[in-house]
Image (tube, rainbow, N blue to C red):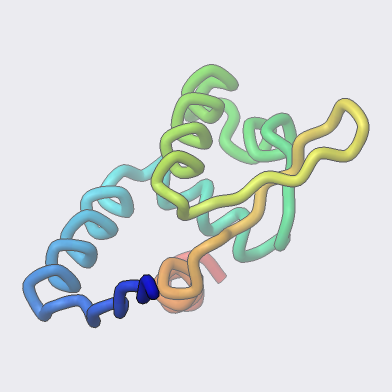
Length: 106
């Protein structure tokens, strides 16, 4: 009889490493702005986000960082025909960005 492994709780060190990784992501103005846009709008296309970031950042930069945020699990996508919609995927990221949005962006 095989037993499924018990999922162990993350250690304090592991949780702190996650926090440091998130802070590194949030330390870039475009990455933070993308997440703030998603907090404000809930769900957006890459084109809509790029429009919000123009002229400070290019469509290419926005797409590059959306890919990074997706790979890290901070944003998720939903396809609707030809359109890909982005939204925040991680509840902890959402809490932190909501706080930052309330202080700096509202």
